[in-house]
Figure (cartoon, helix red, strand yellow):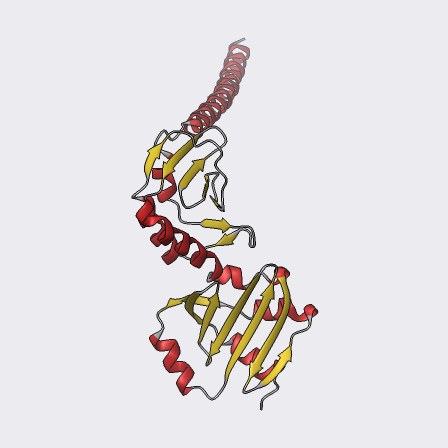
Length: 262
């Protein structure tokens, strides 16, 4: 009899332990699920918090900017040029909506802010918000120039080979025409390191035995690229000039594959 009671007691203890762990696991699962849901709600709320600052303030904090005009589209501009444009943005004066406004230059960031200008007015907008600004008369021409320079001397503009209509390369009076099916090869050899001033590239050109000139004719634009030795190029387009330090892949492609100079 005593043995039977002891056995029942042991079974009850074991069942109690099992029941405890089952209940513990159930509540642990429920707690984990609630935590996940709470975290999800919290994250969603944070994501939905609207930035109430002026769009101009938000725009000036962006790093990646793309510009377009009637000739070229979606050109990522260099950081130095964007810093110059931001200088002009600081002088803008907010005004009411401008009736009959027509943009000449258009741009956007990588997170939904868009903008445009006709050099007289500056419009910034998102899906549900819009702001207009007046460009000072004294800044109109300068703003137009820096926007044009930013696009047509951008390395991204240079590499848009799908817009090229004809390409020739010259070396000491000899001219080679690049076949259309080779445009992508030429574009891929153009690898930028950074923008530079004119002194070092011009010195490199003087020292180099081999210098080349690439003439690009695109859809409604012309551009000239001087390959100044192995490490530098000069872009000339729309009366704008920019110098870049580049990888030597372009130089050796022109020297070894286009002109086959040993």
